[in-house]
Image (cartoon, rainbow, N blue to C red; front, side, top):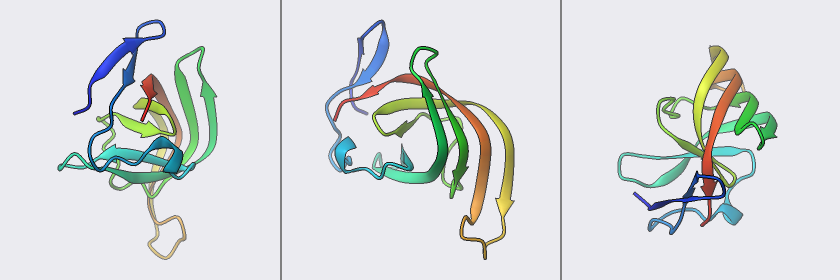
Length: 118
């Protein structure tokens, strides 16, 4: 696991990258990323209708699709934010013939735990 530092008002900051990490600048802007069992960072969902509230330290995702591999109890990364899901308004498993196949979460509130700096 990469080191976490406290900075900017006590928020955790993820410092040096782990080998195989995807630099923030090279990530897809509509994807959320999480570590797999081998510690490799990989995309685990697609997001839409995103509202970031840095003052309130939370992000509201209108929808998270293709999220079958997203472990809701584990932290994840969105752009340069380190987050944790706190609330889900609605979840459904879409038909596999739908372009948004897989688990779809709507009204997802995530706490901002810190920033990703690599």
